[in-house]
Length: 486
Image 1: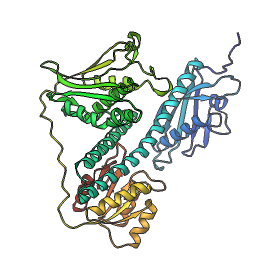
Image 2: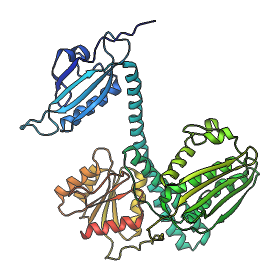
Image 3: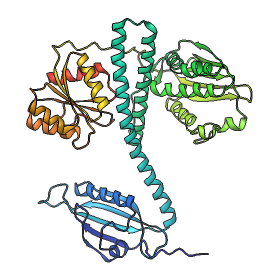
Image 4: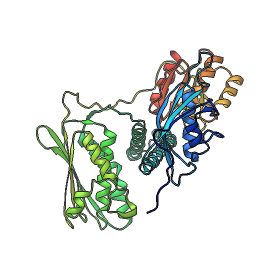
């Protein structure tokens, strides 16, 4: 059997000092043997080297980073060598944060094969998280545009007196976009390890009715286009409220309805019911008359990555649905047999000591004076355009700018503005950086941030308020007027 070469031992204490820019100042002999002394991170793979540079910069700002594992392409080793490192700031009184020297300490780890596999998995998950956050940011911008144009279309429909049906379709479009935004926030919160505790009393029968409307294209339009028919039978009896998150429960029921439709390729009957199960719980069922499942499949459907759809399925839909139901203190049962269809039963406890659900009231436009003179700043043309149109609809005089530097040019050349509305994440100059410059140059000019980030807050004197994307026009208008008054 071939012997793996692994020349370093765990007792080798590695020690070095670098500048904030990552230049090696000094190191001991074990460090020199493992990393060399010509370039600080020259023996790390490019991806690991980038992480090491980021941690060095963090420590130079005064933020210690510890227990980070890197895979080293070391001389004399035919496999990657795992090294544990700590990045510690050297705080000197005459040096400002961001320029602190960095103390690098660590050791070579044993059992390199297992550590290599774990390190690869950890790096992939971290990169996946970063990619997901980037996608979430872009998706929030798209949803902002969708909801903005839906608001403009609502205004046009009212002016044209187009009737009830187009307005109902528009309402469902807005609902779907808002649910999409809520799911994006859920992804962001999961990646940041945040927990959204804002549960509320929910009328389960109303959620079920909304789901039937949202999924109508799948169980009515698309089957008829293919020459088949799916009949819908509903028995949505009013039940006392349960406690939970409407977006998540709609996600579960939509997933079950779509699965039911896919299980009836030749047509059939889709059933959706709600009822009181007993004095303590409500039950909602989604049933179909489709192909059904064997007992072996039924037992495995909630397993992660298990799917009977081949490449067309991810194997995560029912796993996530079960997780959401359990988060709502509920349970999900399945009855099925080959050729006899499937029924999913979801049981939730009634909410206790909570007020009955309140229908959200549409906030009327603020009536505290004439329109304001606003500057809208965003590097995304679609978001900038729709935001500008919406605010003009509320009587404001609006100019726009493509990014922070352009906004400063407009502020210097144009008459005074009442409020600046800026995106947070922009190249060249972020919204917070723009707000800081505005506060320095234009004292008293309030800046409002628009962002899809869940953890953004008005935590400095430079920012008057933060409005989350995708926004509602009423909320944005109210925040702008409040910032102007404040």
